Image 1 (cartoon, helix red, strand yellow):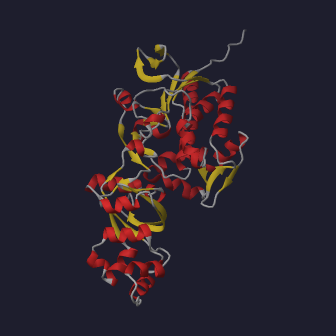
Image 2 (cartoon, helix red, strand yellow; image 1 turned 180 degrees about the vertical axis):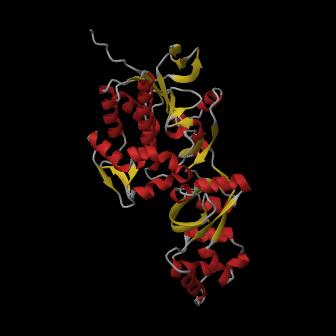
Image 3 (cartoon, helix red, strand yellow; image 1 turned 90 degrees about the horizontal axis):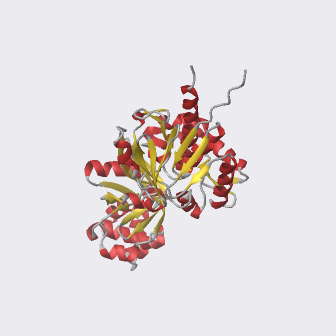
Length: 415
């Protein structure tokens, strides 16, 4: 009796970021014939941009702490992260011939700190596995049961056995993540939470004088006290930057999800700055009230507490002249200076976005409303701080979607 040739499944991956590339790799490794489509002229554009300052691929903190960085959605992401977490990401990078190291902040980087060599090695591996790349193909939804693409040669309609969507969120539209997929899925009955900025800066109503003098200046060695996403008080130390109209930088980004939600609920929110986090409140009070002779208070603060430049400017900006002249109130302000945030910066300026396809609308990675259609990466409703957490979850989610798509196809042939 002649043998029956194995069925070759045709899988489309739409989106050429980390989640899409990993989904293509996983599906191809599982035996599928994979075609990857992207609207841009080349893949991995946001990946390359993120790597300009040093390609942070994951984080080396203990895994139990790592998975908590995804906040309320940690339990949703954990199944994929359990299979492809920080150590597996490093092993995968090493398998591409790229060595890594752990930085002083536990962030993990390629030895040369660059994204381009990693992406080149990855694309070479994907092409070797048979993945076909179709650039300048902008997906516009479905037509007559087929995928519709706008291309330089006009409309193309293509049919596949399964589809993996990895189109990113809504940040950095010029690099391809423009959120144009939202109405396409909503039209198919898929529940999508509004896309909002994450890892973003915030607007502050600075005076023109302060903005002109201090925009662009970093605030180093400061701490922020704020309310977290569950309404609990948190304190974090680090640095951020004063902008012409507000604040941005790593310390702000780490709290951005909670701050964004508080502004949406209350119209504004307040953070409290500690401008001398290495000194106790008692030490600050003693130094502020120490006799200063003929020196001005500004000179006194600089010599006794190192408060100068933008820190001194913030004190003048955020408390009244009367309070600045009151040693007790000034000492309190140095340790707990209120800054009111009035709105997050626009989503297209954000490093990432929150919102997206609701987890209640998927089984694993597959849309309940659309069997055979899978989603991965920032299209889903989760967010994470910078530090390798975003990339790791995108890679893990992409791998899970690719494997689940092929498993679903194989199961559909079972008697």
